[in-house]
Amino acid sequence: MKAIETTATINENGELTLDRSLEVTKPQRVRIIVLLSEDDEADPDETPTEIAIEGIHQGIREALSGQTIPLSQMWDGIDAE
Image (tube, rainbow, N blue to C red):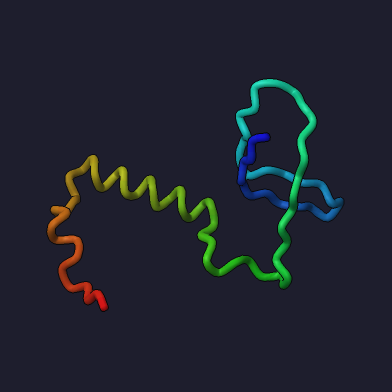
């Protein structure tokens, strides 16, 4: 058995809509485990997909335009304990 983790939304009718395609190549029955937050708020540690994608796009734009810093400078000013 193969496990695939993804996110989804449950609408007011109790229907599940996946945030992305699972890229499964043939129709088949599957088992679903749904993990619900105990409160109505989103997990504060989970970055919404739209924000994550925009961050990736911004990083690509900066890299393509040469707006980068050397790896050796990335830790400057960060104090590790």
